[in-house]
Structure formats: structure tokens, C-alpha cells
Length: 292
Image (cartoon, rainbow, N blue to C red; front, side):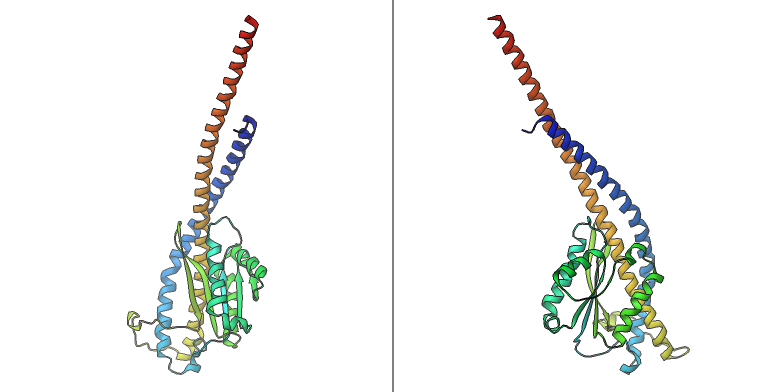
């Protein structure tokens, strides 16, 4: 059994760790509340705009009219990975990295061997991993997550959209964590470009739109706007999921620290009791020796 000084030192260390994890939990809870409200407010707008986009996309019969919906087998793939800049959030980053690795090394292995698979990394955790593994990373943007707003995200989104329009990539995939609640994050892989109609077309309401001013204007204005909202929503979902994952991880860490402190305190009491007993035995033995 460890001596009393070692146990006291360890108890003090665990208490200090508990204070840190408890503070991080409260900070993440405050950030989660703000981000969760933003996600909940954006979802109905983004969902309706996305639905209108699908319906308009069905009315565009000439492929050249819709530059965001090219057909054919994709040969050049861009994978957009959204992780976090910080750790201590459970399996949040590991899940995204694992999925991106699977896409590169399994699903698109042939394209990867030909040098036609690239990664657009958002988040320091993912960027460092891809660099260490030697994956081709065409762009890294870690700063945007520190101040995520729609206006800050637009230039980044437009660069990705322009790369697709110019033919640099035939397919753009989004890999991120979708927010469900503080304890649950849903790993999601979406095809961002080209625009893909739902497989079950009947589930999408069909409307006979009257285009005003023109169909060309709708294609040039509404579809790009919908795509920007879709991408921004994914980043916002990921940010909310990150705060939820970190809050849950810090909550568990705080509970574990509390349990460990109780266990160490019990060991300390036992060790202290044993030390006192030994001292009493030494005194009694000494007294008996003197009496003889």
C-alpha cells in the first residue's frame, strides 16, 4: 500500500483535474446552447430551400442549364472533412477521420491510386492526421471554426463550388457529425455536388413552378444560395455536435474523478489507520519491554 504522502499527492492531483473538467463542461454547455439554437433555427429554412431546389432541379431538362448537376461516373473526388480544432471530445474526431480514411482507401481506392482523390480539411484534428498519413490535402482551413458565421463561410464555400464548376472535381462529398443531442452525434456522409435527386421522388412534393423572372435566373441565384446554406448547415451541425461531445466527455471525466477521489480517500483512511495501529503497537511493545 502506498504511503500517506503519495496518496495525499494523488488526491490533490485528481481534485485539480476534476476542477478543470468541471469548468470545461460548463464552458461547453454554454457554447452548446448558443450553437444548438442556431442549428434548430436554421434547419427549417435549409430544409425547405433544399426541397425547392430538388423540385426546380427536376424541371431542368437540359444538363447545360444546371452546372451543378453533371452526370456521368466521377473520376476526380474531393472529400470535405469537418473535424474540430481541439480534442477532449470523445470519438467525435476519430469517427470522421475513420470514415474519410475508409472512403480514400476502400471506396475510392482506384481513384486515389491515380491521384484523383483530394481532401479539403476543416479542423485542426483532421488536418494533422491527414498530413501525418501522407494524404493529399488541397486546402486546410482551421480558423473558420473559431468564428463560424455565414458571411465568413461563404468565400470558402464558393471556392469549392467554383472548383466543381471548372471541372477540377467531378464529385464533392461532405463528411461530418450531425447534431442529435448532447450525447449523440450522427456520422454523416453527404454528396454535396453534383446535386442528387432523392431516390424516392414521390416523397418530395411536386409543384408546377412559374419562373419569375426567368428559369436561368433561378438556376444562377437560388441553386447556389441553397448549396451555400447546405454547406453552412453542415459546419454548424458539426460545431454543435462538437460542443455536445465535449460536454458529455467532460461530464464523464468529472464523474470518474469524483469516484476516484472517494476510492483514494478510502485508501488514505485505511493507510492512516494502519499507521496509527503500528504506532500503538510500537508504544505497547516498548512499554512491555521496559516493565520487564
